[in-house]
Image (tube, rainbow, N blue to C red; front, side, top):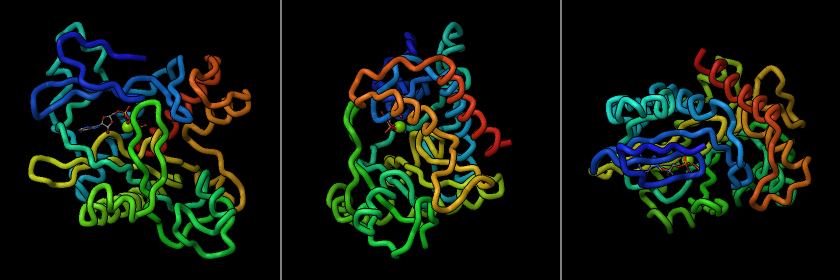
Length: 288
Ligand SMILES: Nc1ncnc2c1ncn2[C@@H]1O[C@H](COP(=O)(O)OP(=O)(O)OP(=O)(O)O)[C@@H](O)[C@H]1O
Ligand SMILES: [Mg+2]
């Protein structure tokens, strides 16, 4: 649930990842088995989730490295901790460049689902972007759209913002670059995923700036935590496809009658193991 390294100084604990300082340029990022649903961290772990997320992100970072550079330095996490701490980083640690975070979340949607579908039914728009009439639940959009959100602190909810608000937060030039890069990442990843029988409905990227001001992909990439993945063979327009992501545990939490305020109810081991199996299936399908 939480990493406790003593050889390095902890600098941050996010909802899922713990960050440790290596030096002024590098940090060790450890993905825990924590799961956050509706922005509340569950009390119990999803067994092995941190390793699965790390494997999926590393896979995509490599696959997408010609689209945009990523935060991995190439150093091994095993080389920056002491021998007794090796089990804590095995498969879940990465050595990353310390970047200046771009203060928006770069969401790209290629299909109509979740909050986007709800908004479309009311107003014909998604995050304020007008879409053609007649789309159904899960319809493919004519083109992927960029729907940024704020970067909330732990315990807060990310909020959708317009592109104009995004420009106001990070500047017009950077906003355009983030939008274009995120859409190109989404398109490139979607083309590949299609060859593995997976539809990427939507996803969220995070970017940072390096010392030269260059845009770098950071945090995680195209995991079941940051994306909705649908199996292509059970995709039917007009219905909500099953998914390899948090939806399974979200459905359980909603059915439990929980009011979505912390603390979350205890989730039975069986449900947590089934969630882990969905994450594993995403990794196996994508990376083989
Ligand atoms: N290379 C990097 N340089 C600086 N900060 C980074 C880098 N990679 C990731 N981060 C930041 O480290 C934190 C990782 O924590 P975690 O992934 O648990 O995210 P979170 O922000 O709490 O939640 P979520 O990703 O679900 O919105 C995030 O705040 C992320 O922006
Ligand atoms: Mg994150």
